[in-house]
Image 1 (cartoon, rainbow, N blue to C red):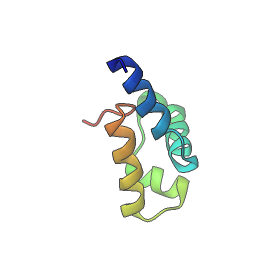
Image 2 (cartoon, helix red, strand yellow):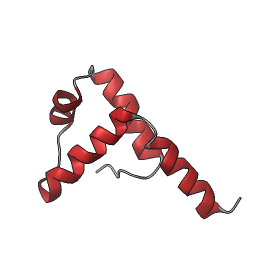
Image 3 (cartoon, rainbow, N blue to C red):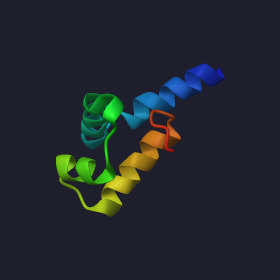
Length: 67
């Protein structure tokens, strides 16, 4: 596989979970103002540790960039 193909597979895989799609939608809707972890946690109604797992998956797939 090409590296671009592998990246696409990783991105699609990261989005293959309902919670991660909800997180992505929340962040996109927050726009330039950004989204806080607390806001995301409240939106998806998950413990912080579970949210952290999902965020890591999105970051690893390079769908989110942390500052």
